[in-house]
Structure formats: structure tokens, C-alpha cells
Length: 591
Image (cartoon, rainbow, N blue to C red; front, side, top):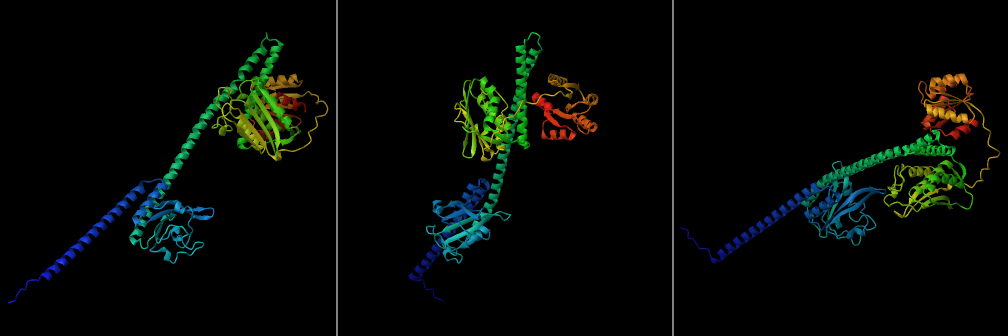
């Protein structure tokens, strides 16, 4: 029979101790498991929040800051950074974009990273780079001048980096993480960072698409606003054009009535003639401005340069602008250089520029104001300034004064089309110069300055004055053909007053019949006639008389270069654009 021996006190104590140890160990493992579970839950929560934040963020800078902050927390890094991979004129350049765990000043004194053996794999888009101690890595310190981290750099031993690249393979940049202690980054840290980088790449692509869409939307809105503004200005322009064209018709109609009145005396009729002539000239200038601005825009306007004195150009401009200046009783002061200065320029066009500037100054200056024109040579330039003490120009309006149809809004402007300054700027630039505007603000007057470059200026003797009296007038046989009865008969009357023998036709077939009967020396043909156009009449005349004993003159409202070419091809010797200038026609007939 076995005998049971009771355990001794020592054995009991040993068993209890072992049990307590086991329980303590189990508690410790339980606590560690709970701590690991809590850490895992925390990381998962951080990862989840990072994903949500990344997915909802469309601003690239905020997006990348979120990515950098979250990845730094997930890896347990002391600091993290995102560097953009960009290409500049010198090749690749890596720009510090976002930083976490360290102030930006910590990197201000260092240059951008270079494609060293440590950094290059990340910027190429290779796999992640992880090192327990980067200072002992064989790739570390192989490039001068620092052979590693430069002095003052944040201390880094544990190193982790991964590329952020698109699905198409474009490397946006790289995420870099560091810790001053060794062995801080694990495989799990690496996997987390790679996961965040993949999410970040998708988010960057989305953000770029969003930004591109926003830019396109903004561009479209600006374009639509510009179109609306152009439409508004076009409507205003057309309304003003109608006003400007109708304005001269009233005095013309009234003056014509005075001339036809039996009770009007000779002085009144002479005054009415002056009114008609002046208003027709105003309409002609208006239409010419419109045509000129169109030609400049299409690049078809040609300058006719010759030697001309600056004084002559300014005298012509003042003469043109004088009515606008005198109407408002302005004081005009003209200051010219002491020496005679000849220019190689188109005198008509430069005079047109200056008369526009003078008229503009008169228009925006209150009655009895002051207008000054000053011309001088500054170094290798001729500078002509037109100053006034008028209403001035607001700072926000200055950039637009040379825009087509632009006008300073003012009840004192007297209306107008707003094309004079745009035309003037184009003409000056065709001469190789510049036209600028300056004003100290509303109520402080304006100054417009023309700068002509050195190649425009030449010191040459003045052209000698013409010798002898003008050539005597000569009687011609003239055929006038125009389907507009008033136009044809009035032109015929003017030619008869000059002593010419004139016959009139009112359509193409009648013009051919009259030509065959009277055999004129000159035929002045309207282009848009019924039956046969002016082109067709000219072609048949040339077929009848190929040796050209007759001079053919085209008169038409179409004045483009293509119209002139077509007239020449049809057999015309000269081309006049309506309204016909009687003096120019008279000079041609006696030449």
C-alpha cells in the first residue's frame, strides 16, 4: 500500500511562485497584446483617416501636407518630407514642397537634393529604400562636396523613402522619412508608406485634373466675359457710328435747302457751301479712320515714306485739329526744335497721328483750356508730346486707352467712335515707334507721347520749292457714268464749271453707247451699275480701244487693296474711293 506524503511548505511556496510567475507572464502578454491591438487600431484609424482626407482633398499643397504628416506618424519617423520631381532649364530639380516634424528653416540653408546614389532610386521611381543606419549604407557619402549629410543637417540614421508615381509611370516626387536613432523603420513601416504613396499618386492625378478643369473653367469664363464686353462695345460702337454719320446729314440737308432758297443772299449761300464742304470732309475722315484701322489690323496698310520736315507734319496736324481747338477756345502752344529736322516718314500718316492726339486733347479739355505740342530730339529718338490740362484719365482706365472703341466716360467728351487712339498707336508702330499715355489721374490732364526711333530720323536738305506757276487747266471730253442720278449730275456740273465737256450715263449699256458716240478722253465709271458693272464696261472699252487713247477712272465705295487690283485688271488707270475728292480729280484731269 502506497503511503501519501503531504507536500512540504517549501514545495507549496515553489508552486505558488511558479503560478504567480505564469499569471504575471500571461498578464504581461495580455497587456502587450492589448497594447499592440490598440496600436494596430490606431494605425488603421490613421490610415483610414489619411485615405479619406486624401480622397477629399483637391488642393495639391494641402493634399501633400496631409500625406506627409500622416506618413510621418504612421512610420514613427521624427521628420518627413515630400520633394517634387520637376524639370527646369538645367534638367531635373528636386523641390522641397512639404515638411513634417521639423521647421522649414532647417532646410533653408541647404540646396535642393541631387541625384545621389541614395536619392536617385526614389526620383527614378524604383522601389522603396529602407536603411536601419544610412550612415553605414554603402551608397552613402559617395558624392562630393559633402560626402554625406552637410554640416547642420537634421540627424538621420534610420532612413525610409519611396517614390510617388502615377499609373502611367510619371514620377511626381518622393516621400522621405528620417529618425536620429537606428533601426526605427520596419517592413511594416515600409508597406504602410508604399500604400500611402499609392493613394497620394491617385489623389495628385485627381487634383491635377481638377486644377486643369478649374483653369479651363476660369479661361472659359474670362473668354465669355470678353465676348460679352466685346458685344457691348460693338453695340455701343454701332450706335455711336450711326450717330456720327447722321450728325453731318442735318447741317448738309439744311445748307442745301439754304442754297436752293430764292430768298438766300450770296453771303448766306457761300456760308452754306462751307458748311456742306466741312461736314462732307468730317464724314470722309470718319470713314477713312474706319478703313485705316481695318487695314492695320489685317496688315494691308502701306506707308508711303519720303523726306519731310517735322515742322511740315506738325503744321498739317494743327491745321486739321484747329476747328476742334478753336470751337472750345483753347490756347494752343507749339514748341519745335531750333534746327530744321527732316524725317523719313509717311507725312500723311504722322500728321494723322498728331491731329488725332490734338483733337483728343481738345475733346477732353474744358473750354478755354490749354493744349501744348512739344517736339524735341532726345538722343537717338524724336519725341513729340501732346499735353492738356483736361479731365485726365483714371489709373484703371490707362491700360485700355489704346483699345479699339475705348473712350473715357465723360459728359464732356462730346461723343465719338473711340478709334482715334487705336489707329494712332498702330500708325506709330508701323513707323517703328511707340505711343504711350500718362495721366496723374482724374482732373490732372493727360499727356500722349510719340517716340520715333533713330532710323526714322535723317538730316537731309529740304526739298526745293516748286519752280514756276502751276500748269494751266485743259479742257477734256469726259464721260460720267453713275446709276446714282444726284452723284452723276453733281459731278458733271462740277466738271463743267471747270470747263470740261461732259456727258452722263446712268447704267452700263448707256455708258457704252455714249462712249462709242462721243469718244471721250476720260471716262469716270461707277462700279456698281445695273446692266453692266463698271468692271464690264471698262473691259469692253479696252477691247474696243486696246491702245488706250482714253483714261479710265473707277469711282466706288469699295476701297480695299483687292478692289483696286480688280479695277486695274479690268483696265482702269485710276481708282477713287467715294466720297470723291473734287480737287484730286481736277488735278488728275489737268495732269
